[in-house]
Every structure is written in structure tokens, then in C-alpha cells.
Length: 122
Image 1 (cartoon, rainbow, N blue to C red):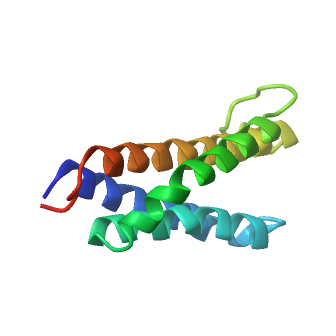
Image 2 (cartoon, rainbow, N blue to C red):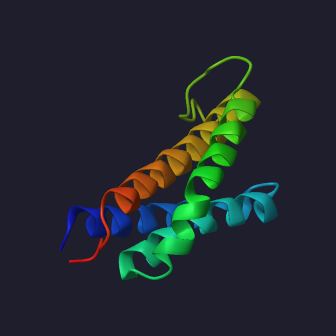
């Protein structure tokens, strides 16, 4: 199995996990689709489906995710861990910002991998 396929599997599981833990968030209808999109893209690339069509939108999607990460960045960085069971808005925004950045970097990796090779599944 190629390194790209392994990465696709890992990121699919990670994004699906991120989707599932949004069920108790105050706004899951925003965040669940945000994480389902890169999960679906990861699966499509894993199976080698629609890669030509995906290549055209991967950078655009990555820029959208990076812009979201920039605008979600907290006013004061407090990390992403819960301390003493208290959750502050800065921790929540930090988590959301980092999640968007991870999705953006994943999409860039996919774009570079698809641009570099003609056949990604070997």
C-alpha cells in the first residue's frame, strides 16, 4: 500500500472522529459538514475516484479552510486542552482553528500528491 493511501486512511478516520464528536457542540450543523468534506475527499483519493475533478478544487477548498482557520483564531491563545473541566471560548476557538488548519494542510498534501503523479494508486 502506498504512503498516500495510508495517509488517506488515517485522515479519513481522523475526520470522521472529528465529525462524530461534534454531536454535542452547540452548532454541529456547521462543523459536521466541515469535517465530512475532507473525510469524503480522503476516501475518494484512497479509492482513486474522481481525482482529476478533485485536483481542480483542492486548492480552493484548502484556501477556504485556511481562511476559516485564520478568522477563527482566538483573541488569546489558551491552548486546546480542558483545564479543570472549564471550557473557555478561547479554547473552543483554538480547537476549531486548528481543526480547520489540519483540514487545509491535508487538502494541500492531496493536491501536491495528485499533481506530482499521474497514477496515485499502485
